[in-house]
Structure formats: C-alpha cells, structure tokens
Length: 278
Image (cartoon, helix red, strand yellow):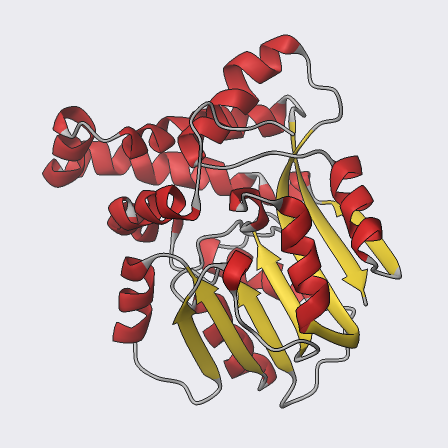
C-alpha cells in the first residue's frame, strides 16, 4: 500500500472535499468520477453515465432493488440510477458541502443521502442488494474494514462493485517518488495494487470475485479535466486567487491532474473494476 506522507483521517478527507467543493463541480463534474469512453466520441456527461451503465451491465436490475452508494458525492450517481433503473439508493458522504449541494438539487423519493462515515455507517446487516464504491475506497483509513462492512451490509447473494485507483504491482522507485506518492498526498488517499484488494475480498468472505482493468477506457477523463483547469486559469479570477494566495495544502491536488494523467500513460497506475458476490 502507498500512503500519503501526512496522516489522513475522515476529517481531513472531508476538509479536502469541502474546501475544493466548487472546483470539483466545475472541473470534474457532479458525478465526481471517471468517464468510460467506448467510441471515444462521447462527451464527458455521456461517458460518466456510461461508466454507471457498464457497472451494472451484468446484473439483473429490478425496480425496488436496494442500492448503497459509498462516497456518493453530490448524489448524481444515486439520482441517475434511481431515474434510469427505478431502484432505491442510499448514498453516504462525509462532506457537508457535497450533501448541502446535493440537497439543493431537490428531492427524489427513491434517493436518500446522508452525512456519514462508511467506517461507522450504522446500516443494518443484510440490507442491500447492491453496493457501489466508485473511487471512494482509496480514502478509507482501513481497507479491510471497508470490505468487512460491505460484506456485512450486503444481503446473501448481493453484489459489491468497486471502481478503484490502483498502483501497478511493484512500482519502480521513480514512480513512487514522482507519481504515486505525491498523488496519495495531494489527493488524501491510499493506493493498493490489485493483489492486495483481491486478498482482502477473499479474506472477508466473498465467495466469488472478478477484476477488470479499464484504464484505457477512462484515462481521457484527465485530458478533459486538465483542459478545464487551464480554462479556469485563463478566465476565473477567483480560481487564480485561490491557487496563488490561498495557503491551503488542498489546492495541491490540482497539481495531481498532471501526475494522474502521466501515471496512467506510464502504466504506473491502473483503474480497476472489482465485482464480488456475497
């Protein structure tokens, strides 16, 4: 596991998202996750929705299914699934600003968004048919407990889908120093490799699992984010002021846009999809 050089906690991760709230929405979008490009011609909105459709493509999604979205951000994923698949979605976020913005978009009877740490989720055991974690497990202080809680909350036969940033197996020293280490520090996260996740999935009791590397389908996300970030520098005085004058360390995440794009190109970092069944 590759970790931040500073000790991270749910509070520091929440602070990261709260302080960068506006920039996440404007540079990354309301879904706050990668897009999935099939033809390469999709716009960013189509690609982010395509990732969700791809995630559930092999599932028999029935109306009234109970879904949990770990790290739901602005609730866009929950709203999309509720609208297009008529499922009930409970989303958890640790960012008050994300929750406030999500609530400002209006209510949906199929969607429930709550401010809560997954490590202390207080959800009933055996209560969800499907759990999604889209780029949220990287922030967890205890990855094994992340999977233990997912196993506990899933009903027997339920499915866990995890989209996750992974490091390559045995990265070289220069990759750790210039790419993966700084990405962890700037993004308030931890990077495991595929084998570490697979070991934990088996350890907590999931009876079957599958892994897919879709890096080449998602890496265009960062070309788009870099383009948007450049435009912000050229057109938004508030953005320039924040980057130049604000003493916050959270702004350093914007430097990771370049590192993440480079890490994908160098194969130092992998974007993986795990499917596990209880």
